Amino acid sequence: MRYGKSKKILVTGGAGFLGSHLCERLVEQGHEVLCVDNFFTGTRRNITHLLGGSKFELLRHDVTHPLFVEVDEIYNLACPASPVHYQFDPVQTTKTSVIGAINMLGLAKRVKAKILQASTSEVYGDPEVHPQTEEYWGRVNPIGFRSCYDEGKRCAETLFFDYRRQHGLGVKVVRIFNTYGPRMHPNDGRVVSNFVVQALRGEDITVYGEGLQTRSFCYVDDLVEGFLRMMETGPDVTGPINIGNPAEFTIRSLAETVIELVGSRSKIVSRPLPPDDPKQRRPDITMAHKVLGWAPQVALEDGLKKTIAYFDGFLSAEKEVSL
Ligand code: NAD
Ligand code: UDP
Image (cartoon, rainbow, N blue to C red):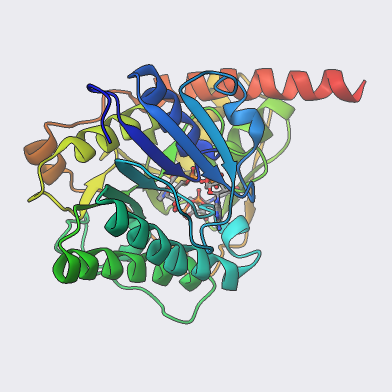
């Protein structure tokens, strides 16, 4: 079902943070985009600017139920991504990853669509191998608070590769490392949105533990570029492939950078470290570079400035409404 170069593309979780940026890029490229979302963490606000356009369609739907549509490509992003949200209803989180993957793979099989899975660096758990390469099998607690997300995503990867082996599906698995940018949920508890919102409000910056744990932060535009390049690859390229920014920072240094960029009077305070919080994380992106010719372009400070500008506007608008 191709109309020239224009394709019909399904994005599940399209009203979320990453999904909304992906939908935007696909529409810009002239594709017809079907955004499917149950609005658990996503909002219409993220995609308001796309609504009404002839290339964009929105469907409220939960991916744990089968979906019957005709599409050429599927990006499967539906799943809450922040610990606060995915631990709110952990059984639903596992269902979304596992049953959602089965439903979307079944759809891909029926309509012979390529399908890309938004997997995660969480499949590596609290890693003993650093930086993490795709060959590393991970160290994941199967019964902890993060397990609904980590094991759900691991099982989804298993399903993707079994559908390929059993049914010859064109699958692509991308392992996303911490990604940030405009349209993150202001209350989702992830570190970049938390710190930026706290700094803008002049509130204490809550560093969990001593803040010596590390993460590597990828700006959303870089991530979306990696997704698009992955989907364009031929049938032999399945991944899993790491997409992330290998520049690694301690959480405390992130807090200091945010305070400085905002020019905030916020103080850093310590809060208990959540259970199973990975101590370090950094992607090895050799494969993404070799296979996709991809490398991140946006430095942390530049991405943070854009994110701060977004939240500044967001909080000002919120203040006006409450006046
Ligand atoms: P998000 O919470 O903003 O987006 C997830 C979207 O999925 C939301 O719009 C939500 O309403 C929707 N959703 C949740 N359950 C659903 C269901 N059952 N049916 C339909 N829609 C449902 O999170 P995000 O950061 O945009 O993450 C998108 C994807 O990328 C997720 O699969 C996540 O696991 C993955 N990922 C993100 C990051 C990151 O740093 N942002 C890192 C690793 C993996
Ligand atoms: N974190 C923190 N303060 C916050 C939110 C998060 O110190 O207000 C820490 C958290 O403990 C973790 C890191 O920041 O070590 C990244 O957390 P996030 O939830 O963004 O992502 P994940 O742990 O899933 O990588």
